[in-house]
Image (tube, rainbow, N blue to C red; front, top):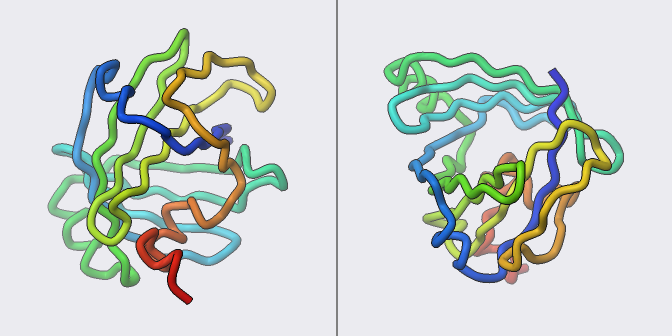
Length: 158
């Protein structure tokens, strides 16, 4: 399956007033090769194993395969992951006929809040709420796999 999404920074916490759900997510990476990533995630009461391919040149689309697994298996696999387990709260926020997934990161990525929107096709029009800031689609430093290696709090440091 090809995933098409765009990613934005958040400029205010107004999105929380429009949130329809929120869940805690813990995730790690078994593999962060540039050609593919293999992720293990616990979201609420479910576990997931996800493989993502390399993004296209614009960073808007890539192959994604995901399978739900039980939480016990996900917890066991997290122990095998590369360093840099991510923790975040995901908010689902409707905007027009789309839903933004807003991730508020914790721990070493605290202070970073990013919104993603999945689209049917790359140039699909969508409503842009006033809490949406700069687009960072295709900027790899905002990829979760990269945040696990070079956390947000380290960006100002050399």
